[in-house]
Image: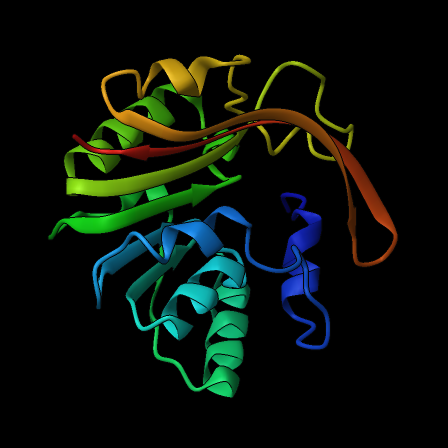
Length: 201
């Protein structure tokens, strides 16, 4: 039986937050999106960003390969009194049937092979409305992944690579940093990260 990542166990515990609160760029983005904006969160985890955006009145769809993660998201969303469309599916297999004002991929593209995320980024860009935004956060090769994550991080990005993939869009935020992460159960990781907020022009 294949080893499961640490977050699968944490998803099953409704009393803990696996990845913390929403990322700070969404506090700024909500002011730029149209009322009722359509949002797609690919690799939504337990919904820290999706739930925050749904609370702001946006039409949110969350996709995650983890059934436990989606069940936790649904429970947390119900507690918050918001509705989110949830889809249990590998993000590589997601079929775009409409365009979105905002597409998010936060820390999950590096979990699929390079050739697969390259194809997916093309589809993400194509299915973003004119004037819409992409928020992409990826782990990079500036430092090696933690030993317990190496088998899962199969598509590590080159440092700065994601920025070049959006050179023809308006880049409103661009960050490169290293951070220490603490997860439930005393699990600690150090990640090198690139994050981009880009507007389709």
